Image (cartoon, one colour):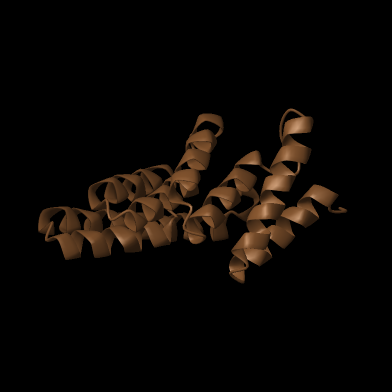
Length: 165
C-alpha cells in the first residue's frame, strides 16, 4: 500500500516534533490542516484530522504558546471528543500554567478514555504524590494495576486465539 502525500507529511511532522524542531513542525502541521483538511472538508481516509490538530496543539505548547494550544485542543475536542491524547496534552498545558487541579482533571480524563496513556498515568501519580493526595494516589495505583492485569489477560487470550484479533 502506497502512502499518500498527506500521510508522508504527517510522518515528517511527527519526526520534527520528536526531534524538538517545534517551529518547523507547527508550520507544517498548520499548513497540512489548512490545505488538506479544510479544503477537502475533512481528513483523507488514511489519516485522522485529530492527529494533525493534536500535533498543532502539542507543538504550540512546546513553543510556549499555551493559550493557542488550549484553543487548538478545544477545536480537537469538538471534532474528536474521544481522542485521549488531547486530554494528556491539555494536562501538560495546565501544568505549564501551574494549574495543578485542572492538569489532574485533564490527565484523568485521558486515562478514562484511553487507559494505554502511560505518560498520563505517570503524571497523575507524580501530581497526586506531590500534592499530598494520598487517597487519590492509592486509588490510582490500584486502578493502574487492574488495567495492567486486564491487558496481560487479554494478550494471553489473543495468543490462544490469534484469529480473534
